[in-house]
Length: 181
Image 1 (cartoon, helix red, strand yellow):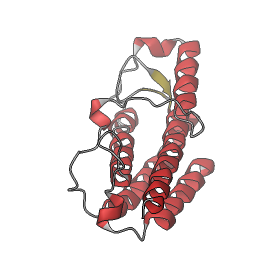
Image 2: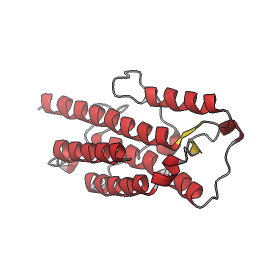
Image 3: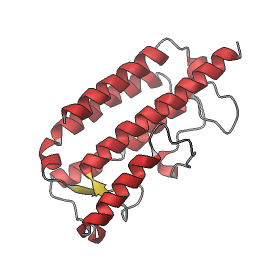
């Protein structure tokens, strides 16, 4: 539990320190049409993380129907490990995101960093509120595909690794932007 919230606090601070002084133009800058801006990376993280909130709430209220596939522990562990590995910062293979997690194409997301930091606090509260669920080794479905299941513990690890991956991507964007000045 503490490892998750500590890591989340570290990531939030890294985002704040690295991107906190950027102008709206800088945070929305893209090197080309096929790339995401720093703002889009942040929006993507908010979208994906928040898609877990209803799942956690349903488990909490016992309104969660465990998928049939969740009965097979080896599959639960397999999916958790595969997804966690795919979102590690050192994994260089680009993956397409599901449409539910795609950020908007326009620059309407004003104050995105402030929204992201606020979101991080909500995520932290979800994690803290899930301590009993973690102890019960609760299994959830992926927000993108109900046939993909993993433990809530793995979900939090996936979220944090995914945030680190996008921090690295956003930092590279900033470096490219600064080298073009």
